[in-house]
Image (cartoon, rainbow, N blue to C red; front, side, top):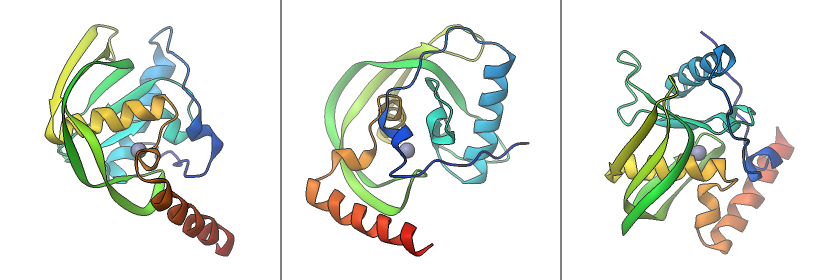
Amino acid sequence: MAILDIVTYPDPRLKNPTARVNEINDEIRQIVADMADTMYEAPGVGLAAIQAGIDKSIIIFDPEADKEKRNFSTLINPKITFQEGTMTSENEGCLSVPDFRSNVKRYARVTAEGLDIDGNPLQIHGEDLLSIILQHEIDHLNGILFIDRISALKRQIYRKKRLKALKDE
Ligand SMILES: [Zn+2]
């Protein structure tokens, strides 16, 4: 069991697109296992590798976030291949954006495609919470945080508060 340190805003690593995974080997399997330990410990419903400072296009997620069941999915090199409808996520949050939550405009339904941990193609269709998680985590792989999808004013207020909190630490 390994709990990874979470990279937090405004760490510049969160702003960059992540590198594709070319081969699923023991290193990748270990990263995914450690990511799962970290996500359930937090607890969170999703995690992108870059949130642990690992520059790889990997996300994991489990809408139930049940530590006992550990029923999570892994998507490697995922992409949103279909999206429709709109909805507002209520009180969306992120382990990398401490002490802040906001409603965010999201697609109501998406399909994400990538590889599973065995290297097989995996297509996941999500609506409701799963749709939000897929959009949120795949955004991380493109260097986008959920606060990039709220108003500039709200973002500036959060940024100020966050920088002050970091200074006071
Ligand atoms: Zn996040």
